[in-house]
Image (cartoon, rainbow, N blue to C red; front, side):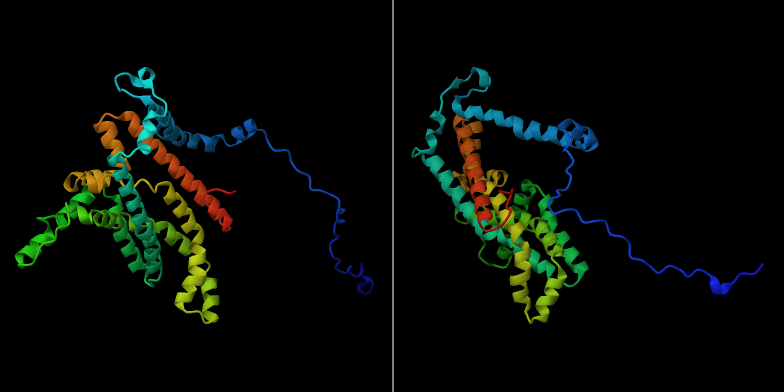
Length: 336
């Protein structure tokens, strides 16, 4: 049997796939109904189980103690407890509007330290992150980062002891100056330079650790933006101004808002460890005032009132700064 090759059927030409008819203009996509809360809990039960321990700890140590703020409205006595102590209303808040020299001194020192930390301490991690990011050697950068991170893991007891061993009257620097016939430095225990000492301790301990977030943001900036700026003839300084800093602006604003929330908290443990050496007048802040008046002095209601107002002021500052961030087009801590 032979096959006629001349009469084979010719293959069909390629045809484009048939397109589905376009939906009409007034057609709306079908929306699936949102699952109920119970169904979502059942669906995500594994993830929620992992979150339960953290939620319990957060409630036990952060939210439940907030109930103790009722002490601010009582003549609280520890042996009577909250139920047995007398209610005095807003009498404990009178110290906030009176001319109590102890409270005014603590408030003034707190505001001065807050201003110093906002102007000098907060920008330093940004500058340090920019300097580390400019290093070309990754090994050198990682080595410097490790050295700068270490002081953060030391307690304030150790940090204060290190500064005393270095700058104290019988510290290493003064012993060196004394051995060479030079004038010694009066730093530890000197009330006039106490604020400078506190600021230097905070910078040494926490500046390196605070650069982590800024370095992470710098690593996420698109490198093509720098290449485009370089092609356009931008110098390193103009690249930093027009590319780097705009890329860091959201995280800078976010951290500054959070910093305002703790603006009246300037370091209780750090100051209380050195308060005896410099005296109350130079070192008393709101946190130490609460401790000295409440725990040591037995004025529990007054101390609780001061602490409550301090927290309320921090909340107002955070909300106001967040509102200002929205006005400048930034997200802030939460969306509007």
